[in-house]
Amino acid sequence: MLTKASNDLAKSKQLVGLLKQQIEQGNTELSEELDKANERISMLSEDLSDANARIYVLEVALTQAESDNSELRAEVSRLHSKADDYEKANALLDIADKAQVDYKTIIEVLLHRKFAHNSDMTNLLNGVLDTSDAEVNELGLDGLKKKI
Image (cartoon, rainbow, N blue to C red; front, side):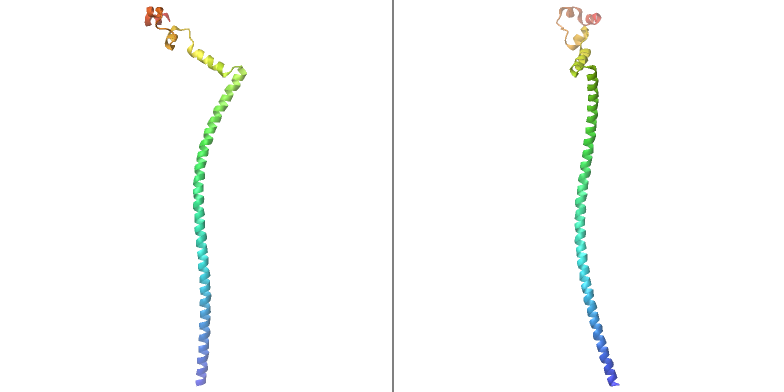
């Protein structure tokens, strides 16, 4: 019985030794896996911070692009209105070419119609009629009105 107990004790010690060895091996494997996981977490954290930095740079670039886009839209709008003005001027130029007149002639006609009247009152208002003239002094303002 003592040998049996001794054998059982030896088997138990052997099993305990094997279990300790398996536990140590499991702990070593778990420790290695934990180290690998921590390295992976560290790399992912670095990748995440890099991605966040790139996102920030892209957001800044997007904001700048939106600002530039707004400025360009305003410039395009201004250029469209200028183009409309040029189209109108070209249409007037075509009309003037068809009528065989130039801008100088058009301006002279407009100035003549606006300022050249045979009216003494118009000449007086335009400063052409001399107020020191004897006839103007004789008639006075009321007389000039009646004469006109």
